[in-house]
Image (cartoon, rainbow, N blue to C red; front, side, top):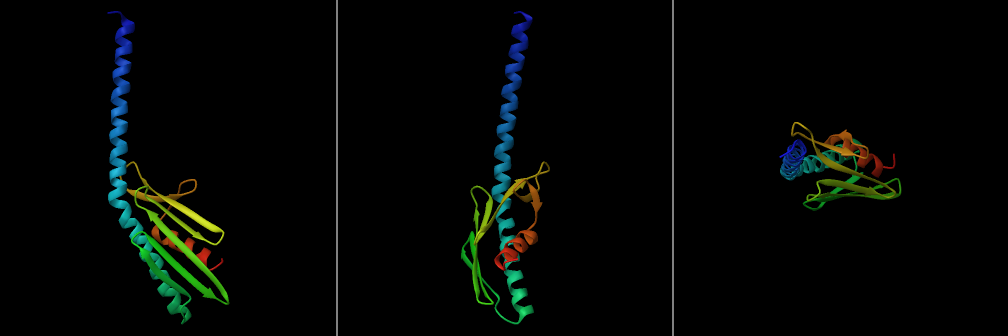
Length: 145
């Protein structure tokens, strides 16, 4: 064999090994997302509920009405100063994406696995978020601010 054959065979083998590693990493990232994303969704859902309860208590009236529509879907409504508005939030467990809409406003967060295997949520250009900031943003939009 000549040098070219040895070099090309080495490159082909390296490329195949890299592809196998990348495929294995992708599968592991998806596994981590699926096992850890649901607790992150539940943390957002609980934070929304807590914020609704706290604001209602602070205002001394039912400003926000929280409802679990399904395991991966919530709804919050308000009728404030004659204005009625609805917030719809759902979590796509397969894609690990939380989406919300409220009138003309909407947002989306994707669960991201960091290099160290930890989870974070990111929206748009990848700005990290946590359950409290996600809940706050959605409810602020619902209240028209």
